[in-house]
Amino acid sequence: MAILYVSRAEYKDRLGITDDDHDFMVDRVLDGASRWVEQVCGRRFYTTASDETRYYTAEWYWQVDVPDDVLSITSLTTDANGDGTYETTWTEGADFYLAPINAVADGVPFTSIMRKFPSGRFSFPSYLNAVRIVGRFGYCQIEDVPAGVRNLTMMAADLDGGVNDLVVPGVASYKLGNELTVTMGGRNVPSSSKALIDQFRRGNRYIA
Image: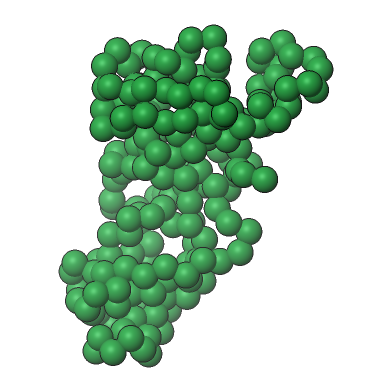
């Protein structure tokens, strides 16, 4: 089943639904709302059960700005000469560290990998996709989804007209469930939903 940021039971309680007759539609609406939140925020608010492998290109020899949220790194290897072989293994703490440095304390993910100065043994090569990371990606664990994201998901899932007000610049339309299509023209964004979107939008990150 798709990852939902609001449970079926929680949303049914919000609507005062006590029967199970429309559970399929509730799930579809919540799935659509959850994916819409990811789309407008530019990130996902869960991680996978096992490690993923992803590849990045470093812009500087001392730093990689990761376009995905990082929760933890199992291994970091680099391709030193661009031949597709990742022969250099980096050690966290000795060769690199994750930034922002206070991410865990602040409850946010890591968004950069920094070469350890002055003790780091290696530099990030500039070849395309020369940095390989194995680890856990996402804003947070699913059980730690921020209250603001949950609220935004429920706003998007509401079928009583609230979802029609959630419009964001740059998004033409998005389908929620089987029967509801939201047209988004970039106008009339309710202040409450816009504030939540701005709070969790991927571009609003900081780097130590």
